[in-house]
Length: 277
Image (tube, rainbow, N blue to C red; front, side):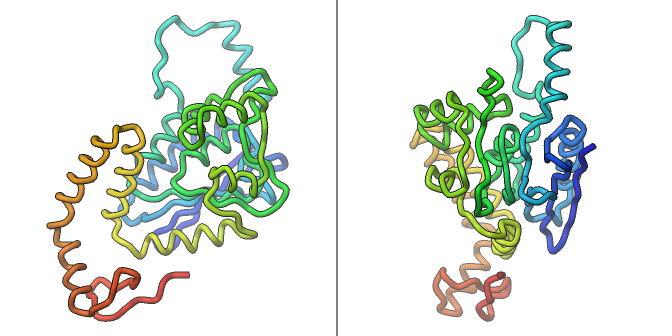
């Protein structure tokens, strides 16, 4: 039986997927993830979330095919009523949309094999860092005559061209981390993706929580808007933030020190801060 392990330090929560020996995701783990995410995101002290695998060389291999086979047989025996399905009928869609729409950055530290729903979960994260090595990333569901069912078709076709997304899905092709980096499907590769993710999260935590939330909101929404709509959204957020106490105090601090925007100032603006590492 799989489990999730939750660690918290300095406003950063690390959620580890643990289901030895193969590292599958199952229904119980999925339900637990939804509950844990709700609890974590209800805590205003949480500033960043990292998802990673607990086992050596595996993030989430893919969904447990034995459990999926049972679900398929049950569906064949008792077909669902004929009605239009909605996205939130799926617990997995609810989880991934929660990740995308929450106000804190969510980073996938992909420490090994990451396929099927594991890769779909990673695609919903704001940043993906993969472990260097001969690991498999992608969505090979076509090997069971299926296409990705956890948002993979929608998200992959937004990150890549429709032609590239179709080729990867239709051929069940998986990529090694360096190939995924070439495609732009991961932000970076690292021999220690969790350490890299923690360092990145610390840099984000050192910045404005509300500013990061607004930037995430604009970036996520803008990809589905026309350019004019996206610029309107951005301008409204600028108008709302520029006159805020937080931004005005930061501007006064920079003006008084003479530092430029490459320098991270502390909240009182008296001296430059060393970047978190």
